[in-house]
Structure formats: C-alpha cells, structure tokens
Image (cartoon, rainbow, N blue to C red; front, side, top):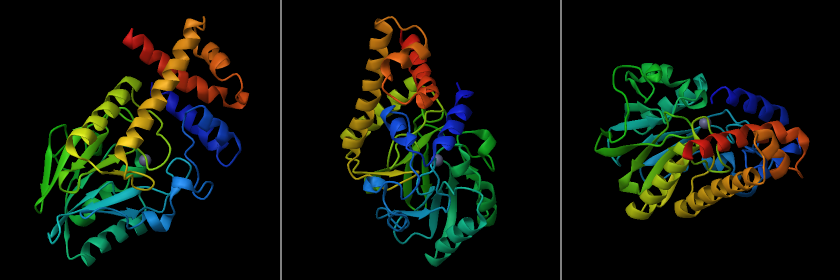
Length: 303
Ligand SMILES: [Zn+2]
C-alpha cells in the first residue's frame, strides 16, 4: 500500500501549479493547493500564525507547498498561567522555526513540558529531535522510530502537563500511526493531517481505517461538544460536524461510484477509471487509478 504514495506524490508535484489541479479536485483526490492559488477557505498565512483557542496557539512553520498548504501548524498548548507548555509537531528541520518556537515559549514565561507528534511524516516530525534536545525533554510519538526517550503515545493516554489535560485518540488512516489530541477544556481536537483546514488528505494508511476514524471523530464531536478542530495544515475549523459530514459523504460518494463501475463489469482499477473518470483529463488517470485501487482494496476487504 505504501509503495503507491511516492507515485502519487511525484505526480502531485509534477501537476503543481497547473490547471490539472482542478481535475485532481474532481477526482476527489487531493488538490493541496499552493498558498495564494485559491482564496476561499485557504486562509492567509498571517491569519493562521497565532490562531487558536484559549489554550492552543498555532506557530506556522515556513514550509508552504502543495502538500503542506500554508505550511505545518506547530501547536503550543498550555493551561492559562501554567509554567509548562506542550509542543505538538515542531515541524520540519528548520532552525529558524525551531528557535522561534523556543523564543515564544520563553516569552510566555514557560518551559517545554512535553513534545508530541501527531504522526510520522517529516513535515511534522523532522525537527522534533533537535527541538526536544534544545528544550531538554523527550519526544513522545506512536512510532518508536520517532521517539526520543522512552515515553510513547497510545490510545487512552492522558498527557498531563502543568494542569493541562490532553487525551490521546488513535485515529489511523492518513497514516497508521496518526493520533489526535483532544483538549476537553477548550472543546477542541488537534487532528494532525487526518482532517485538514482545507481539502482532504492523501491516505498513506488504509481506507477502512480512515472511514472508521471519521466516524469516531464525528461521534466525539456529537457526544462531547467539540466545537473546534485544530488541523496540522490550514485554518482552524469551527464547524467540526459539518466538515466531518462532508468528509464522510465525499468518501462514500466515491466508493459508490467505484461499486457501480464494478457492477457494470469493470474488474481492474484501470477499467474503473475508464468508466468513472471518462470525462477527466487522461493525464490524471494514473492518480485516479492509485486512488481507485485503494477503494477496490477496501471493498474486497469488506467483502
Ligand atoms: Zn503534514
């Protein structure tokens, strides 16, 4: 499954800045637009840097791209008046950004109590080791390869730092090691790349896992009064139920199209693409095929 990602990534990069992006969007795949290409909900960098809730503040990393939108959102999370802060996703190995996080912590009169990762992708994790070393703490991650020190992260963990409480939810799908951090005091959830501030993420994990994750987040929003999602890229989302309903509907709609193509006799991803995407630029068919194969795998698995 993971072998497909480099292909999709390479294609995405080749298509960056071309009108083919529109086609990608129609494929329901993932037109992560370069900043400024679209306005709408994309948000401006100046609006994203510094956004947040009473306890969570975003520091935007300077790594904008088609895959990272305006850049990676690093989150500082602390109880008001506390002397310790949690840093979520220090971001890429960019010394200016890492220093800026440290300066922000000091300006707040705080010290770093914990460094957490939402998932293993380098735009979130690559600078974590260096930052944690500066701060004199470890890195807590699901994937042992991304930890520093011996504290991991797992479903049900409660990260308690300086009176703050973050609850860890395993939410596989974008990657198999993705976690969310639920901040009950603010009715907010840090979603990493599982729910983005704009667009929908590439799946590097399984579609079945991802669909279960969306249902789980939707139930959490309904049952626990979650009013804000704090994503790993793009602006914060203040209508979690609406956004998750759209994500779920979008995935179901795509699956239904693939199922209908199979019922009409298509047996391979290519044949499904020829039916479902017949009016889409053929240049995009390889990307569509990659996405359809994931859906066929899911349908086969589901039986
Ligand atoms: Zn990311």
